[in-house]
Image 1: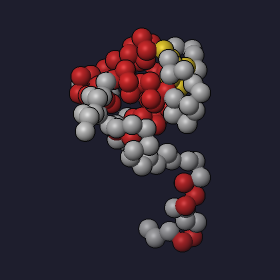
Image 2 (image 1 turned 60 degrees about the horizontal axis):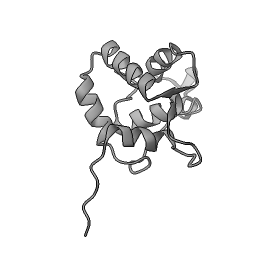
Image 3 (image 1 turned 30 degrees about the horizontal axis):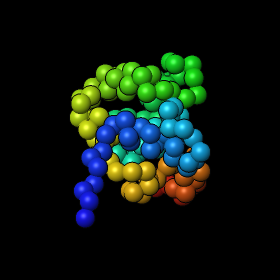
Length: 124
């Protein structure tokens, strides 16, 4: 049996940048794909790190997709803003597995209505 190749951050960037579209070349990543990646690693938990945080930092580049160097700058900014250890974050992103190996719940705005209760039925 052959040994598995060790995961690299560049390899993960390539795989997640091609998420849901194998025709992409893997050189740029979109905000949606990166948020999915962060959700798979459980770093994006809507408490400490939110989609708003990533969106604001991503828009700093005025692009819809970031290449490797821009993405690294984006990741450094995110870690600095949220006071996360950059090396630990890179390790987590590297070792989270390939896209889709872990179930990821991407919340939708409609989820709010699943827990909605009319004011009259609320207990105070």
